[in-house]
Image 1 (cartoon, rainbow, N blue to C red):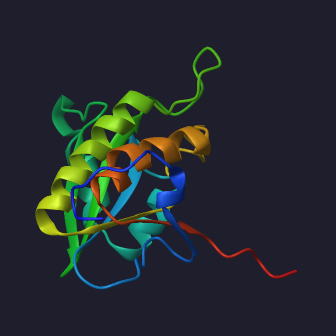
Image 2 (cartoon, rainbow, N blue to C red; image 1 turned 90 degrees about the vertical axis):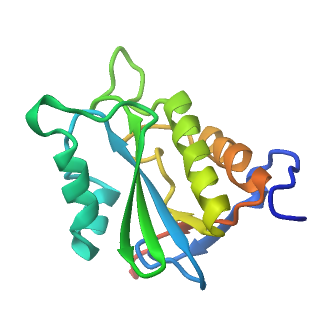
Length: 170
């Protein structure tokens, strides 16, 4: 398949690995995509691993909420952290908790953010790396999220790797 060619949306187009998404494997430009909320709160979930490794993604996110400013659902901040690694702060979670039974993940915002990540990845020849975004604290269903990832990234020829942390030894 050539870069940019479409194929049917299948979550099987995503490569799964055991490892740490803050240490993306492979060569060339790499984008680490993760979900942030629209409330200006940074401090739980995968963002903690990002902050332990690099300070600029958190600093850029927090700076966006200073003096009454804010980030809106569907927006993405691209923050270079290493020579070939950029972190994509994707705003796809509304608030922090369930509202009227609905999880905080917003699938339309995730689709918009991943579409922007795909545009940047295709323009730079980058691969995209992530944990199982939106399915932890954001409360989303992985089968729905993986279909959105396939539709917005994999089907457009962007290589995607999803990392699961190793299980602790007994």
